[in-house]
Image (cartoon, rainbow, N blue to C red):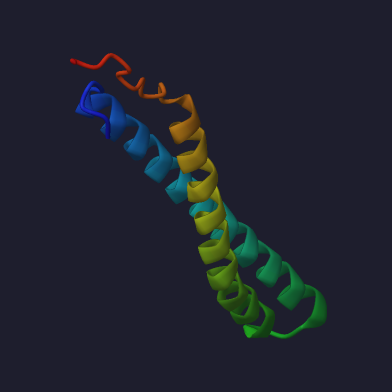
Length: 91
């Protein structure tokens, strides 16, 4: 965090990213749950596909969280103003 930035704006952006990641995780796990239930119903296997899809969603979620936070951190760093170097020297 830069000294000239307000800590409230930094924490607001961080809280927004955390909220987006949390909602995204719920969507991925929900989709895995529904798809696993659908496959179990189609093939007549009760918990087999459901458990497989839920277990497969764990590494997928970890990878997606890593990629999304990397993307947002690069976006946040690019939007912050560049620090100007002081080129005036006292002689």
